[in-house]
Structures are given as C-alpha cells and as structure tokens.
Length: 412
Image 1 (tube, rainbow, N blue to C red):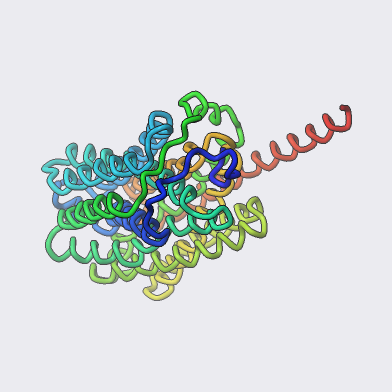
Image 2 (cartoon, rainbow, N blue to C red; image 1 turned 60 degrees about the vertical axis):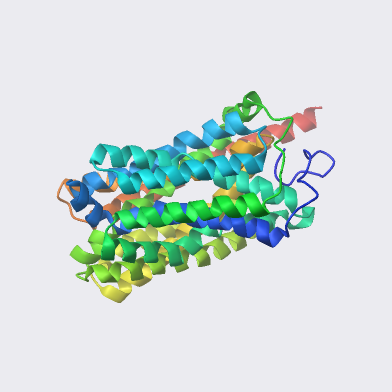
C-alpha cells in the first residue's frame, strides 16, 4: 500500500480532532529543519571540530560518516519494528532520540565519544522523514497528498538556507559545540509542536516486518538505492570538505564559509522544484539528467574552486543537481517498493546518507593521500558515473521485465 492508496484500502485515518494541515506540516518541517541543520553543519565546522577533539580534518570527517551510518542502520530497523505503531508517538520517540544524540554530540569529550554520539543522532533521520510523509498523506485530501508530502521535505532546503549558515556562524563565534546545542533545542521545540498539532494517526494494522522486508526482494529497489548511495555520494565527496576548500583553495577567510552554505541551501530549494518538473516529465529521464548534470558540475568545481564567485555559483549548481536527484529518487523508490509503504517512504534517506558516508570517506582518503581538496571533486565525478552505470542496469532490467510481461499477455 503506497501513500497514494485509495481511501477504500487505506488504514484508519487520523483522529477527527485535528489541527489544520498547514500546522501539522509546519510541526514536521521544523523537525526536518533540525535534521537538515545537524546533517550539514558538521561540514561547515570541520576544522573547528578537528581542532577541538585533537584530530586531523580527514579524521574529523569520519564523524560525518558516523551520522550517515546511523541513518542507514536506523531506517530499516524502525521500518520493520515500527510499521504498526501509532505514527505520532513514533515521530515523538524518534525526535527524542535525535535530541539526545545532538546533546551528546555537544558534550562529547573525545573523538570516540563524538563518533558514537553522531551515530546515535543519525538513527532517527530517515525514519522521521518516512513517518512524516505517511502522517501528512493520511491527513491530506487524496488529490493533495503528493503536494503535502513534498512540503514535509522542505525542512532540509530551509535548513541549508538558514539553519546551517546560522549554526556555522554560531559555532565559529562561540565554539562548535554550540551548533549541536542549537539543534537539540530545535528538536525539543519539534517535540512540543508535534505533541500539540499532529493528530493521533494510527499505524498500518496490515503492516508486518515480513511484509516490509519483502520489498527487499525486488532488485529494482536495490538498484534504485544503489543509484542514490553511489551517485549522490559524488556531491558529498566535494561538499563534506567545503570549509577547508574555501579557506585553503579559494583563499577566503572562515567568515566566507556560511555564504557558500547559503548558496548550497538556495540551490537545494531550486533543485527541489527542478526535480518536481523532471519527475512530472519522466522519472527515469530525470535521473539521467540529474546524474549527468551533477558529474559535470563537480568536474567544473575542480577549476572554479580557486575563484571566489565562480566557486559560489558552482556550489549552487551542484546543489540544484543533487536536490533534483533526491526528488526523482524518492518517486522512483515509492513506485518500486509497492506495498511496503514504510520502507518505501524512508529508504531514500538511508541511501542518501550511505552516499554521505561513502562520499565523505572517499574524499577524505584522497585528501589524506596528499592529492589536495580539489581531488575530492574528481572522486565525486567518478561516483556520479557509477550512479549512471547502476541506472543503466535498472533501465535494462525495466525493459526486460516489460518485454516479458508483454510476451506473457500475448501467450495467455
């Protein structure tokens, strides 16, 4: 059962005593804003974090990977164990874990403690977005469900436009720990808003762990997840090290880093609109265009990164391509997951955060090898090409399946 299911087959809807849909969506967007801020602010504060815990910048980059691994682990775990649970209660529990993980990050006194805290903070990420999508789909009229779900995803672009630059500035001014304290405070605000405005939406009584896991037998699901994990990793290979790139390659002061983060955030908002247009035209063609565009822009960044305004513009374009890829990947996953609605709704963020881990790790390897910060963008180009290869395999399987279906109908 997908989030666009018929009302006749849908599980029981939310309580009749509900806040307006705009308030419900706003409460969940605030949670997404907190998640987007914590996911990306580490990249803007990487030099300060490295100095604060006494490790190299590439080693500090492993905290980015730890958060991403938490997302990858937490998403299927919550999807399997929480599919039947009341969704408001599940959203509250996830946000509570998120708040504690960020508070632990702020208090971490060693490299190991920070890595563990970032892993804990990442566990609720994908599942929160998946549950949020299911909540607003249940609350919205049938003809508005797609738009309602898209609004929930605005938390991350808004975070990149506002939350990440502000938290980065705060971390530079009074210490990197303050950024995680700010995120924890926003998470507490989300708890209050969800408890106040989100209705008591029941879980799916027909769901089961076996049913959710059955989607994992679909090779198209794995190929689509692979496209996200590998192809989107190209962006993270570059963006994970944007702060030292700005200061060491572009030659700008630390105070310029928030402007690059702002450009990335604006690009994310624009890219979401571009991705929606591409998806309405063709999801598969949209995937091709987004991956090709991202690889081309990352290659361009190896040249423009030494020039201030061209570098800002290229970061903006990279974000446009990456965000359009997110939208078309989400729609592709929702289609191929079929009846496994929780896995389908949440798995996109697991794939994207696996991309986060992969890109940050590989980018850190080439930097640590002495090839320079620009080499991380070349890693991104290779990963974008890898995503295209997986997409080619998906298209080949899609064509073979379609031909087999036509042959079976002709023989019947």
